[in-house]
Image 1 (cartoon, one colour):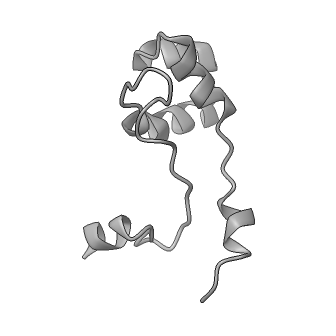
Image 2 (cartoon, rainbow, N blue to C red):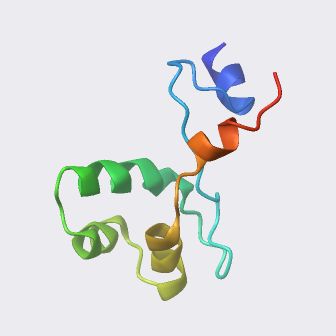
Length: 82
């Protein structure tokens, strides 16, 4: 059931979160699985450069994707039809 809710874009805990693209748009490297750990470590106070180095994000395009991503789920959810 939880997997089905996540596939439909609904979080079973009720918390809304925005997804980062699954792959880097320039080089095609899979990056989505790294997003949550990146966010958590940055919130804990680690340096973004060190976190990206530890996660294996070496290319400029992948780094730019992580640094430029903005969670807009609150703004987008205002316009959702129920």
